[in-house]
Length: 72
Image 1 (tube, rainbow, N blue to C red):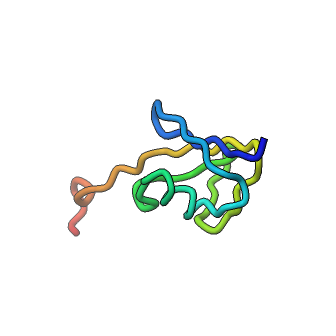
Image 2: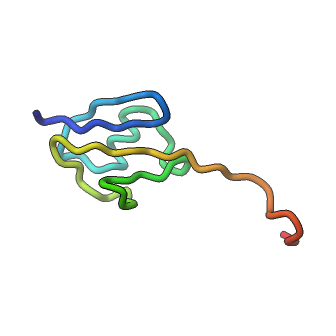
């Protein structure tokens, strides 16, 4: 098995092992700035090379205005 599984919400994607997380996200059409990626419960960065058989979970990041009561 030379693939990596990436999960975002209820969608599952398969990409080739050996590419960086950044390249894998581009390949599946996910904007890197909108998600956090985890492997075995640990955050990983864009430049991490994905290994065969891994499971990468993506968590959508919510962004928006400032915090209530805190001036921006």
